[in-house]
Image (cartoon, rainbow, N blue to C red; front, side):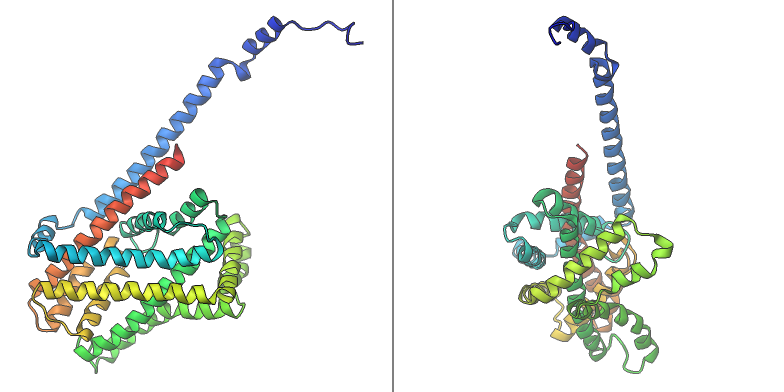
Amino acid sequence: MSSILPQPSPEAGKNVLVASPGISAKGIAVRKTGKGSLRALGLFALYSILAALLYFALRNTPFIEIWNALTQLDLSQVSVLFVINALVIVFITARWWVIVCAENPAIPFLPLIRYRLSVFGLSYFTPGPQVGGEPLQVLYLQRNHGISFARATSAVIMDKLLEFLANFILIGIGLTAAVRVGLISHNSTQALGSLIPVAVVLAWPVIHLILLYRGNYPISSLLRSAASFIGSPNWVRLIIVSERMAAAFARRKLGALLLALGFSMLAWAGMAAEYFLMASFLNASLSFEQTLAALTAALFAFLLPLPGGLGALEASQVYALTTMGYAPAIGISLSLIMRGRDLLNGGIGLLLAGKFIRDINS
């Protein structure tokens, strides 16, 4: 039968290929041009957003004053502060690395430092209480190391819970120190009462970890109760699965969880040492309690919905240092040195985040 049917020649096949509009060279060129235009539009939107974040975060930043504050320090003092800041970043990254490596032992440590800086940069320049870069953590793990979205999200959930837990411990100690050194009056029941909502919020990580360890899933339960309003989109299912993975981690990897918490506390110890040294370099001899109280005031400033706590940080340090008997200039200088440190870390991180997002779109 096949010998009877007419066979198409090779030339005819070529003509069919050329004549077919779906696979013609012109059609392919049009599709490539369209993809290139969409990619260029995406990059333009990305850099526009980053430029807007930088503008709103930096438009009131006193760069000249920051420079003048930094020039009060000699090179050896700047070097010491730089080393301590680097160690703090290493400890914070180590907390996340321990959590990730508990389920994925092959994950290298050094790339996570780059990821952590990117997350800090995005969070620092975004209005809010130092959050916003967490989706970037998930994307880094998923795209660069092949970890599923659910597992990457559960690792980020545990990382944030331990970060907030360390914050709660520090703030609890710091508030006690603030009362003892006079930043909060013993008789100011109204001021202490206003801190109760903050304490409840900061206590949530402890409560959440306990619930996860006992096999309860508060976020999943909340999402299920709201199913009639929000439905069951993919992101809801992702959070539910991630919370269950986080609970399994809390039960099965208790040693890793405690080690990660230890690194988080080391990071805060480094921050306290850095703050004490900055104050001493500016001729302010703070006691241990005064250091914790002033550092807690700075932490509260960063919890406000402002990019980098802009304005609030400076006010908190002037108030703290003047209450302790020092000149307002020392509080301003302290806040400016911290601002310069954070701008350096955040600027590097934002550049790294922009490169990663650009690579995703390319």
